[in-house]
Image (cartoon, rainbow, N blue to C red):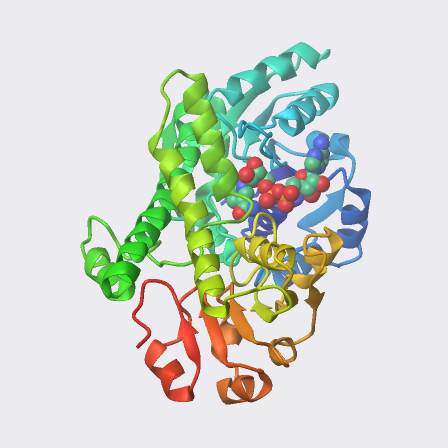
Length: 437
Ligand code: NAD
């Protein structure tokens, strides 16, 4: 394989991990970010996010001279054949996508573009954004340089992003140019993954449609879990029974507190806004959102029913991140639960293996006390809420937990523990869609 020179603009969860993985397969990568603190940290060997395996891969490739960091976009664009955009696409209050980061980067690329480059949109963007990016670069590029815009949506999952990038299920490349497509195929050749080539609009749409479908699967099983709670059926057995059908599959059929994180809530809202704007409202997705919200409310109601009054109750919460194995607390249901409990006057003590630094830095859990271990969190607690299914929690000494709690009640929002074991241990145990007696 021939090594290529690549630039990634935006060194966050997607940009940094993509850059490191591209370097790992032999490409020469420069990661650009406009946050000088982040660039300085990366240049000094400090990794600003937690992602399993990332630190090693970054250090190895920096040492090998295949990966470097800069805050100068010109450096990145001048020295690369392919320029990836991996900047945020946050939601606006009405759910539609704020594309100002993408537009700004398009202008910045145009300002330094001197010769042919492939500009690749890796951020999650609404269908037809590629056209806008191309128009913008053309409008602002005084040098009149040639370029092509390509859509290459990213499907990595935080918590296993390195593995997902090194071994993707598929790579989607939306391109209208054979020249750009040939270069993109060279970029991905070392990954030996199936490549799906489409037009740009279809590639953009695939990402929103995929995330919406996964969220729909989660809401579906959560709606079924409510029926299990009402009928005494067991959601895990039901999910096994449904998931054994190859047409359905078992993944994303775990009932819990609902989806959260930096992608699903915003991408589902975006897809609703996109379909509305196109005049073909996707109302099914509104129901997906409603079920997701209800699931958390149903869980909180269970807590209120059991504890009667939440005011002044000492409640421990395990988990702040939106899922295990990440430090990402953006739009985390666990954080919402902490804040809801604090708002109701509970005295909340929370612990998360990796998410506390960002929760503090981004001022996301004001009013709760954060402590340094799972056991410290339950000291004197009248109830324990399990909000994120970290492996560490599955391995905690539950006898010790019981000893330290004032009243041994566990509300398991992720069905991490076995109800029969919890009963044997003497806990009052509530979970989701599973019989607890
Ligand atoms: P992030 O916030 O972690 O990282 C974005 C980075 O871009 C930040 O470091 C920021 O400083 C930088 N940035 C912003 N404007 C810039 C500019 N003008 N020039 C240079 N750098 C700039 O975001 P993320 O989670 O990596 O998401 C990026 C995109 O990828 C979003 O569209 C997201 O929806 C999509 N995506 C995210 C995931 C995920 O799991 N996080 C998965 C697939 C797709």
